[in-house]
Length: 275
Image 1: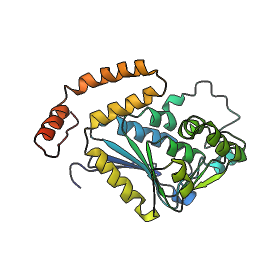
Image 2: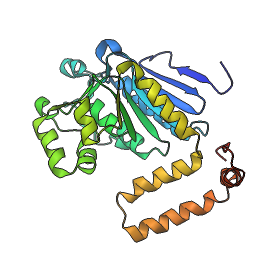
Image 3: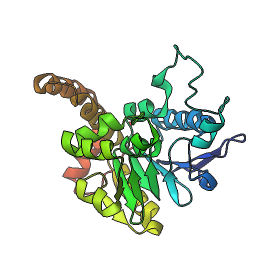
């Protein structure tokens, strides 16, 4: 394996995998026998890997995907029913100090690195919210997105009530959440919840091709743009323009800015360094 490539797996938990190659970090949910349902350990490891990718200057793009026939079928309800320490929603324990800032939905939302969700299969519940938290989604043609929260007696607990109204508008989001319906791939594409629908065996190929295209641009500029897009969700236009200007000034001092300008003038492809 080249110096640019790194493979990392936790010895105690191979249920989430991390790979870095050519500035693209791939995080894979790896519990196919349980349709990648999320356990407590997986939750912690996913957070760890998302933080790792966001802090690593060698990572310019992130792909989040799963193994097997599902992307993620939600939280591990079998552990929830059995109770004990493995239950993610332990109703018998009061957790006044629960810090949601260190859970995957919040960490994913706060990331400056662009994240592509390669939906190798269906996503339900927590898996749906996680997919919606990514910047771009590429979906297998046989996959579905399921918002069946109300059918389980809960609400979208990990961001769905925030994402769907902003993505679709109030009425469409209401219909999906209140009915708990399943959306097939063509419906997801028509609604704009995914950018592409491809054969299942082409999902990672398409995701990686897009990641390579993104990684061909100046990474600091992309991260600044994503940061501004996120902040702009809650800002007025005059305040946002001011913040954008403050982000622009440091970028003009980078080596990548000089490279981008010279490459344009010399009519060649730029070679960015992330510096």
